[in-house]
Image 1 (cartoon, helix red, strand yellow):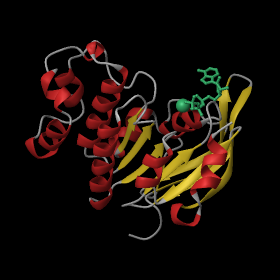
Image 2 (spheres, protein in one colour):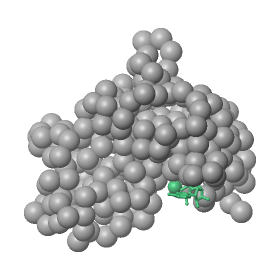
Image 3 (cartoon, rainbow, N blue to C red):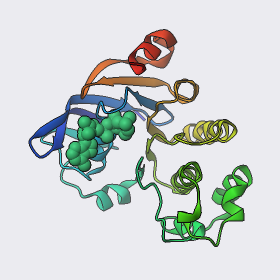
Length: 230
Ligand SMILES: Nc1ncnc2c1ncn2[C@@H]1O[C@H](COP(=O)(O)OP(=O)(O)OP(=O)(O)O)[C@@H](O)[C@H]1O
Ligand SMILES: [Mg+2]
């Protein structure tokens, strides 16, 4: 395949009269992960909402597999293969763990068994409502749901938030496998070591704008850390 699987440019938008994201662009190829980094409140989640169709951009364009997304609703983007694991309310609290896992992808031994083996809490709580899980466990459930879906593009908003280190490492393993399977990932992260473990490319945002972008291998960790700490 030539060119990125997913690309976006000039994405601008916000809430009411407030512009939160300004002219943000990026691209992710099949088999790659791009991490979006930046301090709290710089607009990372708003960018994800603008890219998934949950918030209409004021300007800018996004293309997935050669198809412009701009006129498409979130469910239409999902049908094309855009899988979104949001930061806030990552799962349906009133549905069981099993229902959350099978809402978008029927229970499939090949896809689900490795996830249940890696994250035994999901198996143990299968019949319980997701609302009984801790915040970190809900992020694991959301991540597992996204990985188990078949869509080629994954947008993950802080998957490691509140998750124990050993499970963050397991997440990194699944991200690597997703890349090897030819999926593309755009991942918002605050955990720099996890981000650097999975990222081929990075985008650093500050006050709604991209202030640094490039191949992860070309940007040193201190520079990134300086951008992420106040
Ligand atoms: N629903 C909303 N309505 C109005 N303003 C919002 C809304 N959501 C976020 N904002 C504002 O937009 C700005 C960016 O928020 P956003 O959640 O995109 O940042 P973020 O980079 O994801 O932060 P964090 O690292 O804390 O997740 C903040 O000033 C926030 O207060
Ligand atoms: Mg956020």
